[in-house]
Length: 61
Figure 1 (cartoon, rainbow, N blue to C red):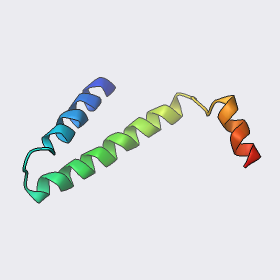
Figure 2 (figure 1 turned 90 degrees about the vertical axis):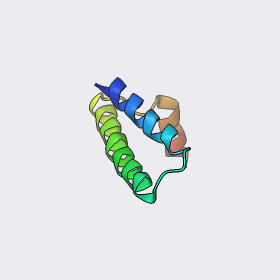
Figure 3 (figure 1 turned 120 degrees about the horizontal axis):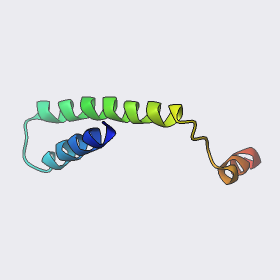
Figure 4 (figure 1 turned 90 degrees about the horizontal axis):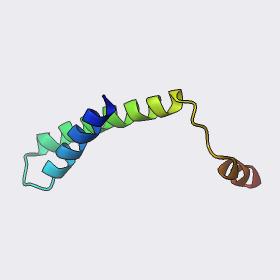
């Protein structure tokens, strides 16, 4: 399912290069927000936590 989301989002972004009405760009912004939210939710649900090196760097800061 995510592969279709990636492809649809990529196609919408490529169409942004063409002269389109302003409403299209608002639609792309909304679709991208939903798609990126879905990707973040699935990433979080997959239990992929920050790598150990990144965690150490955050602790140092």
